[in-house]
Length: 239
Image (cartoon, rainbow, N blue to C red; front, side, top):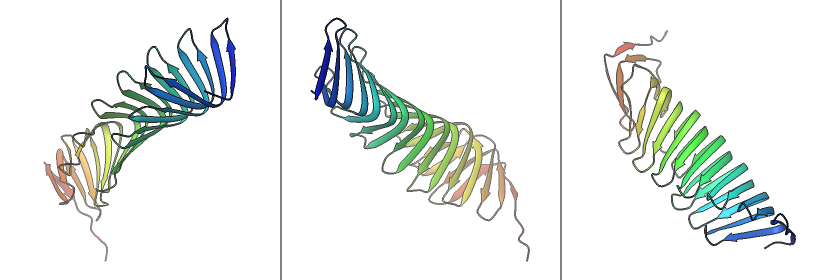
């Protein structure tokens, strides 16, 4: 459906413009846009301007789409927004690829995932909707709004069903403005309200005291810090 149609019988290509609406019954998806080009021989749809794809569980919006009907892969570009209605999660990025058969979403550039309690930002995401696992890479920031906890790393994996975050490599964390953590390979459990690492770590409290530990375990709500082989450097206030 659209306001204007141009069909080339030789190339089997259809160009549509103005309030475009394309329905694919096989893929159970409806696509809206300002303009669209349908390559019938290749079963590929290109859209441009105010592009929107809707199915039972998801809504994807962007400036441009490239939808391969045979492979059931949708590529979105510029101002991408992916809404998972079932999980009540929003994902934003510059580019995204949705593998509909596998229910996996790859994002690239200014990636951001938001739900009721958490915000995750990074350069790239790999979100497995079936397993409900999100992997983030490069300049990762995880924010637990409820517990006022921030975690920074280059790589992180969020197990949404278990509410656990694993980081890989150098990690900085801030908890309720009480402690600053510098460590590696940190695990944050929202259910247990705990932050821990088995790696050598440096912790600084809000009084300026510094703790060197071979490993640590921190209870967020109780504000209790435990560790192995702890060395404490106390700050002495000048009077």
